[in-house]
Image (tube, rainbow, N blue to C red; front, side, top):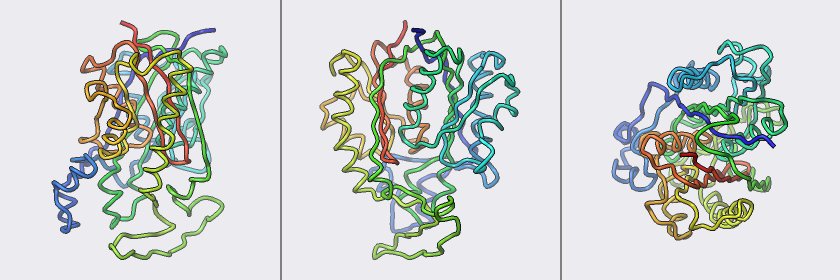
Length: 334
């Protein structure tokens, strides 16, 4: 069976930056220090009003081609992970094929996943290569979660940022993609959801109300039950790590670096302590970009590679909206 490798990664951030100082002017009951301590984010990038996930994915891909010296004519499949597509139809990946000038023999599809999306995307790319369907898969992740947030939702506005990434998966590269552990529990769907806008609830509900703490609740904007998401995460992560290590015939001590979805600082620190992972083997790149959903892991991998932190076996794990979770091992080629 043909092996699959990550060959190159690049990413794009929107021009607009929203700092904690700016957020405090909108929510004076909070302080810059409180935001930084609670979520670990100092600033986040926000897509422009007319900037879409497709636009950002194109920018990330163009950066990949130029920065990593990739010939776009060699791409024979495009995968786009997004929960903020331009249209119900056509498929955004088809639009991206045209905007990038990729061959018309190129396959293209979107898939709708959040924080586990990058890991799932790697699994799809690996399957395409193993099945001799494609040789060079362009995996794009792109999210504009800021467009799902109510302007007065200070909790989520401190956490989420917008971004797009581009990864080329091929039959050679710097990181061999190992075996996967994946999981789903749709019973948690309503704990992280935008209820209206799809065909089940096509019309806006206009049901905005504020709780006793002044937090907005509306079916027309993103709702996140933070405590339930936290409980879900600490419940599934130990089993996820056990499963992925077993499937790759490794022990926890064999992992040189752990790269988890960058949810928020509190959750990451809790998981690291609970799983007894040494800080030197746990990667964090949250403060300058925030939680960028499916983009967090590839952004981490990009910077960890720049810092020469990638060696031997790297465990990546994504988890969140769905509920959905996934992990794999990247074997780093020196």
